[in-house]
Length: 91
Image 1 (tube, rainbow, N blue to C red):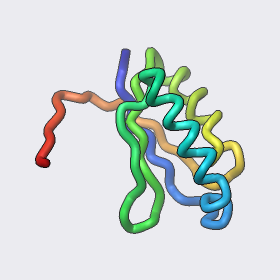
Image 2 (image 1 turned 90 degrees about the vertical axis):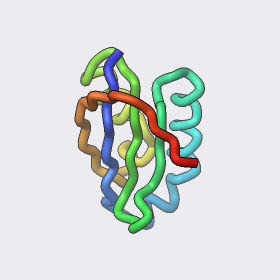
Image 3 (image 1 turned 60 degrees about the vertical axis):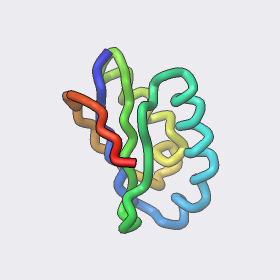
Image 4 (image 1 turned 180 degrees about the vertical axis):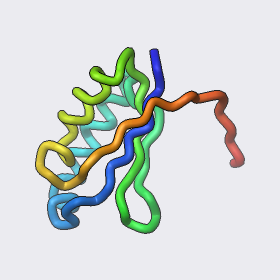
């Protein structure tokens, strides 16, 4: 399995507000099945970041393209394979 950082820059604020509940439900289901490791919005409102664990770029892109934010044009996306080297917690 590889780790991917997926940036979801804001494309349409109104669509983002409308589809946020479905987006959050979708990510929660993926988290429960082990595909999403972490997720959250940027505090400046410019979008968000989702960390996926997936066997391939194509597999993670398929998941991203099923995200309600992407399906409905609320967000764009940029996928980068990420070399996760550790987990640090400060709290």
